[in-house]
Image 1: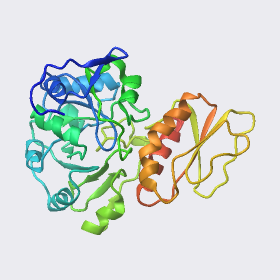
Image 2: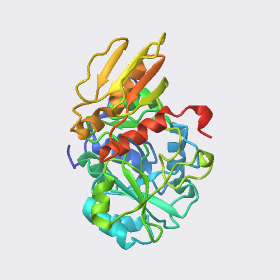
Image 3: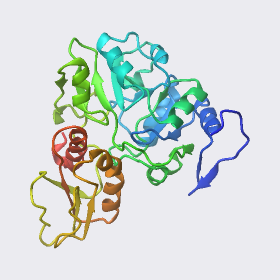
Image 4: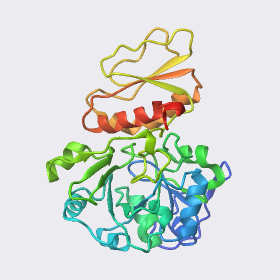
Length: 341
């Protein structure tokens, strides 16, 4: 990708302007338009973070409720001061060790950050993505960028440009194609607003790595009764990352049994590739390589959901490392609307 100006016109894929032109994408952001950008976690729907109209456009494009805040992305550590008033010691230790990477820190916000970005709360989520295209885009644009996942609110997160186009269509002004996401689940979110850091959302950075650096931290528990109130961080609603099809979960060691009389598919991991009674089985990868499983997770869930089965049975992972983040996505995707508050 060239760092200089270009007159290259974006291609149009399914009537959505798509391509690899970082300069064009940066101009779109500066003009207040929306750009789907690749990150190492999932594709983000990016807009100028300090432009209230751009922030409002993100919420409208995703049909996202205003009580669910956005994460702001910057390219360098010294740009955090554009968004946050201070960087507490625990936050600085985490940032210096894990940025760029799949870690979001909730920091005290500056007054310049629109209320819409933070759901009116005093903290703002900030991260530096590790994807080279995302960082180049933010540098070229020269502005902090708000970027939730580039999909309709509550649905399966996108890990390719094609997923973005299928979900958002013409609600995005340009899709910057950076290939498939390598991590495949959203960032880990840690609040360092109080005396003790708190894990708000497990994600692409394992809790064990964080605790090895700063010691034990608190873990927030989801509360469906809080679903219609301002959220401290994105991804905390009891129903999220959900397929259209009904999804039922089984334990890591529980036998997979199709539901009688229903078209049933199975999302699993390990060596299981066939079993009687399932219409389709997808294994995410080896049991000892959760990085591969995570990278394939949302794409595989989309494939099974596209079959419109009566039920998706999904095998949970051991509750450690990336398995904690994958289980979080499974539990929120399997929650029924009636129990989501």
